[in-house]
Length: 407
Image (cartoon, rainbow, N blue to C red; front, side, top):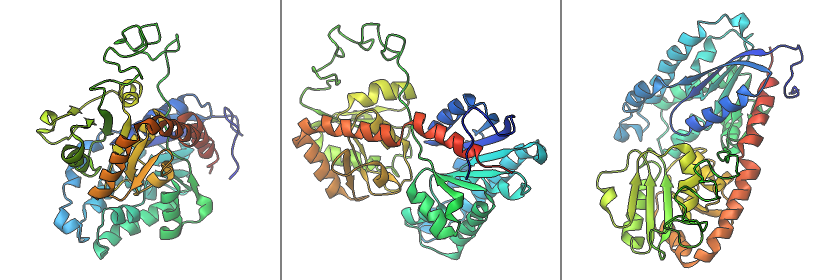
């Protein structure tokens, strides 16, 4: 694929482009950085359409998945969701003349069924963080003809797309091997984040102008500081954090159980999630925060933790892991999805088996007994995030890749 140079186009005009982005979970972070970089790229005359209005109906359709049936492969909820989104995205597409469009980009493929209704003359890019073949396997669904309808529809979407852009090698390999798409039409561009910009004095925007957070005590620490820049819930307690909605799928319940049974007197646990079970707030050394603005999460909350624990049962390319690494926090997470591409086991964190108590207890116990080693692990995590998952690196690359997709 021949790429255009940034800030120009071969025919001297901007490409009229529609960008559709699903708005749930980590896709909101993708939307944030995609919008920023599109605004700075003169090659695109872009209209970005966040699919906010899918949230309510999507949640309802998700409830059509009845676990005792779905785990036996008798679930049709995903296929129905594909069809619903085909109509919704198609409603926007019908307001544009196909001959006027130079590019249609849709993230994710579940919202991309409408590309099947586009003329072949309209270049289409489908962006993914998984394939449903992988997702069904991760969720331990049995493979039945009920699921095959979804996989066949997904294959048709990939075949129609001029390019499939994947957040990971894990998902890209599935597109090629499981769906038979030529490798030349599949491109890995990793998702990523960039820390919020400091203010004009070189401090975080919450700074008080002297290099400290607004709660600083004048000596470089928070008012509860223990001398190393970390919040001191108790000087002898390790500070552990978790971030994620869809609390049970992401293993928050398992982490809470392990903490209470093994580490409640040795570690403080902060849960940032909108669906933590009732009663968790009153547990020993547990703090629950339901809503934290992203900038605050990245500049104040995450950097105050010694360890990020994310024992997700099944996942894809979770931004939460990248965010923790970018903030310089070592991560314990599971060998699912693309997470093994993110974490160097034993270097920037630890990889453990999913949905198992003993490995989680073992790695958390190691962290408690080797606290002096955690800052160095966090530094390695930060370096890896900056090298592989920095938005200022990956989104310009995405812009270049998209500019190379032509009629």
